[in-house]
Length: 182
Image 1 (cartoon, one colour):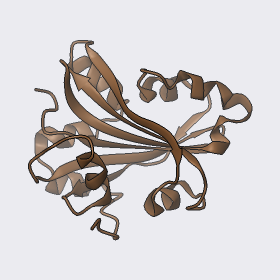
Image 2 (tube, one colour):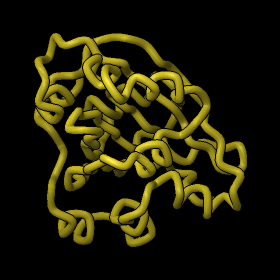
Image 3 (cartoon, helix red, strand yellow):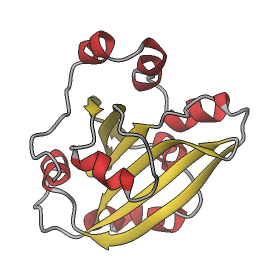
Image 4 (cartoon, helix red, strand yellow):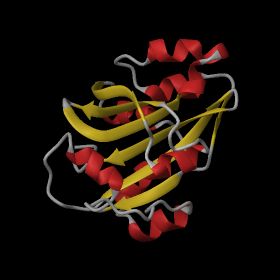
């Protein structure tokens, strides 16, 4: 059963103290994770869409976004792959209200494109301070990832942040996979 308490921490010190140094550099990068992955893969980064559908966010996701738990959202789950191998799992939560007004175009951009460059190029984008997590197999985020890959039960590191496009929130959570950078 997924753990109900959130594993997310707001302090970068938490990452520096507990995370292996090779992974802490990834988690603490100030740039788009997509940009970093592209550099590491010699520009051979691909996006594998696992699932994209309308549904309900988890309670923790709704709380972080500041929306009602029963609020319909677009959920996008992808692998970002370097050299054809999954390096990162990303789960993005787009509240329905995001696709109104000036941001209507965004839904059409969510094909095989990574979301990072789209967000970082947006003229009115703001980003919350990131949160970090040390995930184990009992955490909800880990359970979601296990639907898509078989893996040893090991600790995984993640970060998440809210992005605001014209004050409309969306959540991006990124889980580093064991193969990252290999």
